[in-house]
Image 1 (spheres, helix red, strand yellow):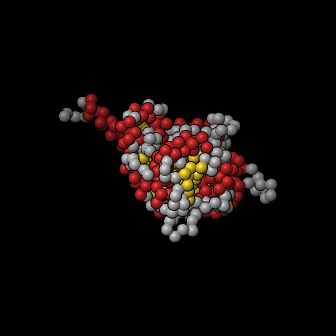
Image 2: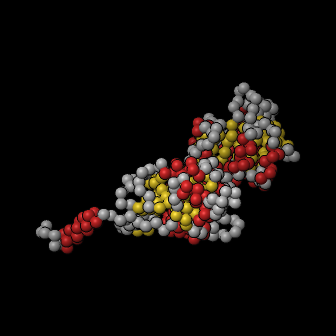
Length: 443
């Protein structure tokens, strides 16, 4: 049925075992071909198998799959255009589906599919993907239900694909062993490299952000990203000792749906290190205060809170700010303007001379602060309201970045080395200078 050369990464995709298998990363990895061939292979191997191959829109489905499947399956399966289905002699069905609008997913309600393939999975919302998983079920004893995904970084589904397959951040009943990611780039596609070698140069000539996503398969950058400055290799570091003279501050973003608290230390030349986080859901103020106060024993100069926490509740007459104070955690309100705050963070992320002659970002994050690291690159530009603002949705990714914005809005001060350390450093520098110009003794 299929007689073509299979690329090594495509073969890895074909052989992979798991409940959810994702193939992709960069442009040109041969993902669409692998998706439709995998679907056809499964239908040919198993009798009575039901496979649903999906793209977001019907035109994409026809352009990327129907016109290729028709010649590929000629004489092997019968195509009914009115149903968008290929029928195999062994009773298997390959259905081609789409979900252009959010509500289109409900056309599959109550259906059972042994295999569901989401082609360009990042074009599907998390809600669509989650609903489709409920349709991925089977009563067969010779085949386990499974879902396949192909994708590139970016678009509306970037966050959920990145969480499951790149960050491997699992929640609820999600099991790590169920998720397999196979990364492929244009360099893994030997056929494309041979037939169209100029394609690589095309990708190299893209603007940096697009090049990082489309050529390098970098999941920390995508079109519409708010903090395109964010680079994991620049902004995330392994933990280092927090020196006793560094100034330590806390910043809180609070809502019953999510508490985000960050600890940040500022060295004597003004560099900032986010070294601890607490990010939990469904936490009342008293429990939030207890968790924050019991985390670490380093002196904290101030705890910044957004000024909107000062508003009194119409039911109790007590503000959240007061509730924190009553629980033993007194805060310092900050004005928290959104756009100026975000632009200020962009300055902190931009590499500059850090005061020691090294060019690097003034803000860096310990690798242990996983929630902040996950959320920062996911913020997108707002599509409504002020176009210079960051989008407020998905809401669950905004809390940790908001806390960081409050941190910098509080105008934290750098630490100050003890006089003895400053004098010792100055003497060392002076001795080195004298030696260089010939006044430090004969060589």
